[in-house]
Image (cartoon, rainbow, N blue to C red; front, side):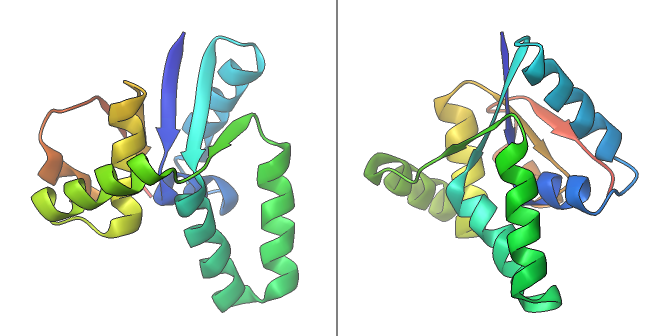
Length: 134
């Protein structure tokens, strides 16, 4: 079974119904059919919640969270080890700390990272990436 890690940009694309949203919907469909696993760090989820909260208010942020909770996405906590791994990735590759959580989770789970964020190019070829256009 293939495993995919959504970063913040991927969730944002899906929630905003941007042109690449059908790619993410396809992954979610695969997860529903138990042919794939889709996971996301709670740090990246919180980043999107905060963005919606800042731009659209609490009601819209809570509505977005309710949508995510219904999706076949496993929200994965920031364990102590994952925090350390993310800090190492941030330091080594000059990523934002939240982005480093997505990378750490993808590396840990031997997963494909799903993103539109070109900053992840700094990581080289350490794991597969599904690039989205936002």
